[in-house]
Image 1 (cartoon, rainbow, N blue to C red):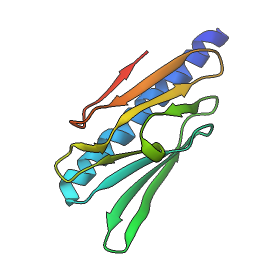
Image 2: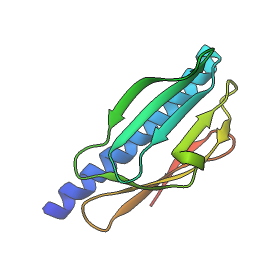
Image 3: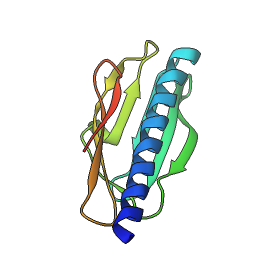
Length: 118
């Protein structure tokens, strides 16, 4: 039972991360601005940033569900960035880890496509 609950939390966190990345990509295209998604390794934090005339500004922050944290991110400075065309100028894999040993990877490629991998 406990293992099932942990898997559900990790699954929910993975879907949330994918949704945040897809929303950021759509925001970049719709508003014609560069958008970054910053994760903090070892925490549950995700923040969405928009590049404006004065520089980068955080437009939304969120947290992953309890018991799940960001274990690793291969993107430079832990920031995935989307251009005004929806492609990724910074891309990589963000690894989420639950309370057990189970991990899920959220992958953004150079074309801006977001997918998951176990």
